[in-house]
Length: 102
Image (cartoon, rainbow, N blue to C red; front, top):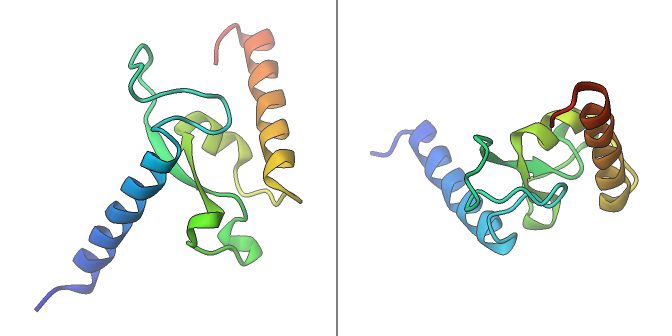
């Protein structure tokens, strides 16, 4: 008998593998690549339309994002992927100017 938590974890890992491969193991917002390994940022799945806005786990709603970009968008809702990407890039630039780093 398979425990429900184990099943969900396996399913999530399979979805992650598919989405990461589709996005070439790189953040779709800033371009950070896990293969580059010059920085110690990990990749995660990001919901374009968050759960709080009735988002789902469909492949079309999931993208690869580095932890930093994923946290910058937080739980905000955007009208489109492009609007979300523009918001994140502006926040990254602000951090770069204000703090001198990503």
